[in-house]
Length: 130
Image 1 (spheres, helix red, strand yellow):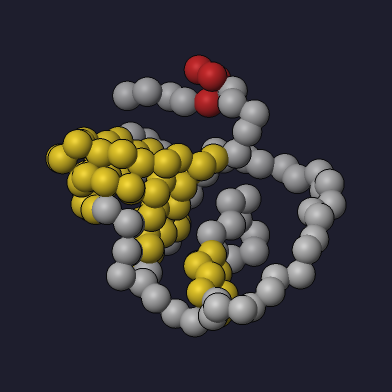
Image 2 (tube, rainbow, N blue to C red):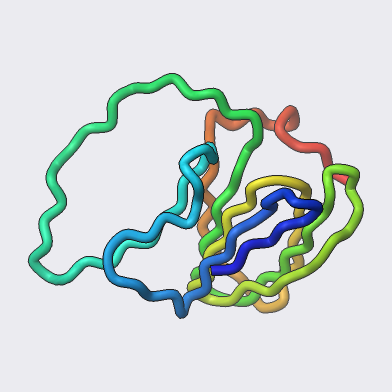
């Protein structure tokens, strides 16, 4: 797991395709509005059926999870003031949780990815493009 921290603030967490650990590993602290965990269970393990109760939550920032299914994606990190900070490369099987700050993407090799984020979608109210 890689954490990207700028000026003491957590901007992103990357889980590389090579990560492997028995049991349940949470990468996020329980205060983040998007939770990210890895689960590895042996054959025959049963997870008790359950229902999630409705709980009202307040979400201040839209946080996104990207799962790279194929290809190579470059991720550029930016400060809240829109200043470039750093770039990283994601490959097939890598996962990133974008927590804070700005980000941009460049497709290095044809990419197929899955995005997961909080809803409902707010359209143009959700982003400041620069």
